[in-house]
Length: 388
Image (cartoon, rainbow, N blue to C red; front, top):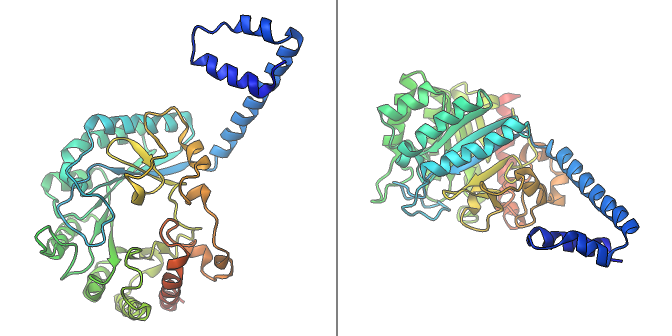
């Protein structure tokens, strides 16, 4: 008599070979009274596995896909981790992404989806993804929102109306008012971006945040930006570039950040609601980044990754697969992120663990923590002095 494993292997091969005669196989290899018990036992185990998976899926009800609409960009940031080239998503692929997430919403496996439209610079091919986005919002009836991660340099009347009329959130890249992300010719984009932000503010639109990165090229421009952000009461997230660790002394960054916080304080800035440092927000305690759990990234071909920083590496699945997305995220062992992440023991002793959550899980590894953790602690503690 065949074992359960041998029978499973046979049944698997049978599904790939339509000419296989199952009845003949059973008659010649397995006693009838034993076969039924073996089959029942095997399929009972399968039902148990599927039931367990359905229960586990309930842990994830909201998800935020970071959708790469293009690998092209009109700027040339020194800290960009992407492979910039002239490749774009097709409108068909975007509609396929819509269908992929709609099936999870319709089935009840997901209660809410937030598209993060990204690139490169997503406004480069705005005409490609505009209509699919509008259709996704309409079809999912309050269960899907959209935000754009943009340098805003290409904002025009058409894009402005699309953003304002459809309540599209924006995360706007700006590192300073003098020097910020340079164009290909090396010229700073700072003044252009500031003017575009002021244009939105004049329209009464405030559904956006400013996103800034600290590295050796940008940290000197934060004072003026702090004054601009503070006076306009803008959401602001400042991040330490994980790819330049050690190029600037931690004490220098701490000193600059304390001065930034003092400037914001003089503007009666609401740190609790508006300020984030390294994605740490006082009004949103979290246990680490959400990559690979509540956040995924989708490239221009529909391949799915656990984080936007590993696009073009090994994909976990794609939008055309029959695999359940949440099952894939829970079971993947390729990346140490999401469900496949073990917190460092040092974090258990840290007073900020419920705010910080160990930081960026893919890049803020132990070799970086000795650099970033002291900075984060001093900056957050200084923020707290403005609130208490």
